[in-house]
Image 1 (tube, rainbow, N blue to C red):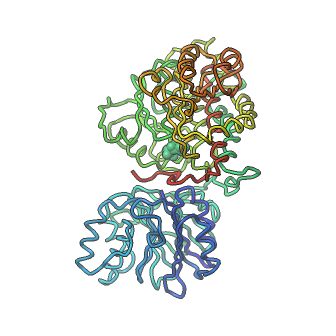
Image 2 (tube, helix red, strand yellow):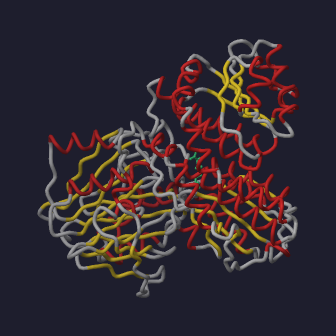
Image 3 (tube, rainbow, N blue to C red):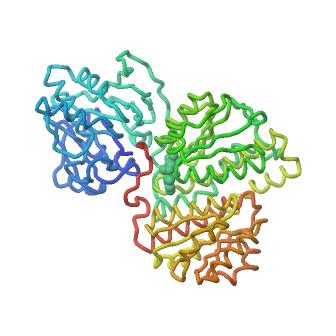
Length: 607
Ligand code: F6R
């Protein structure tokens, strides 16, 4: 997590550092800070809380200098105070860090023996202290950095600024993303292309172990061992206009409304609408001969995978093992070489997902990824990439990436079903038509927003909310609960509807709203029985259904949200929109910070 930025320039950098940090604030917003070099001296301004606090600090007390570094923090070690805010500095060096230095304690002991003592509670400060010790011993900046990073364990993206070095930044990457941007007579560093897009579209992604000596004229990149290396310069498609809220109050609702278009773009990648067939694309694996598929991801992305298990198993008869990446990576599951491992990630940088990917690669699996950020590490380490193409997702709670992931996975399940000879022509035509109609149905689902906003008002009084769903709608119940917790801070749990009576029903009383996701499908009758059980115990039910479901069962529900009638195949994608809007408006009614919920960060690049 954390966003870092650096500018080696020829013009004042303070304002530009803050603007770039604004693009990175989605990565963390516990504190922010910048350091510049003013007549050779390191100067810092830092502030706890959001970037706006740093900006007003800088208004009162500006910083001069044409070279500088900046940081927006998601706290891991040490409270989000000013003293723990980056950049960390000694009189000789300042550093910003994204990641975790796992061996910082023994390093601190070693430094203390030499008389170097910390003043913060962070793991990151040790990096500034170690570089300082090497500089004190007479090493030049590059040698001091190289000597330091060779001792660090854990994950890091680092940018250093040195006393008396007006034209020098040094950057290093191991496990956390870092990109170099090339401008006209200025060079930039940033955690992602979004931050750099303010300045340039020419971007190089540092590889694992790379470090770079950066001046206004460019960057000289070295490998871990110190050898010079050339890395590709990409022209990044990321455009800073993509990150404006437009007429919307929050990014989250803007992104919810972008879903019909996002989903349509995904379908366009897979479906040839003129011939009503799937686009043939070469893949490094063959769905027809696979015995199993392994899916791994975190959070909302994991839940997209959980829905797809139903699709792959039903429509392609392809057995799917799915696990949360943080569990998978340490479970050491046996894997038969030649299998397919699929990873799902909006950011493409999630540390656990990446570790799971590397485990599978080491176990000779074909690696495929469903990713939004195409230049991300997960993309770059995958043999086949299915890009979501839904543009930057800024709201910390994932919405459009989720439905784009679901749509991608639905298309892949169809592809697998055809390749494996499971889906006949007639069924294929029906499923394809269901997919093709999806963007229109999502637009209709969005039209229910005012009604859902009213229903959300009632949820604001609840301390606990249950979400129930069956089959492929069960992961949507989990997602509904996750979204509500994240943005409104109301405790919520999702359950498989059939599981209710095995324990959770003990929670039900008139104060616990139960959101039942049950459009009319082959399992709706079963879920309705569970709804009866809730109603019998006085639980107020919010039913998310379609017109047929409402006609039959609305009497049991305190309130109903009527979504468009769709084929059950795509019903989870439509229901996802309803639970997103419900969570969003609950949070808005409660005055919560929807786009930047407390304690969260969008890109989870630490374990
Ligand atoms: C929830 C949410 C998170 C992410 C998770 C994985 O709204 O956004 O649960 O889904 O952190 O992130 P990515 O998809 O970037 O790997």
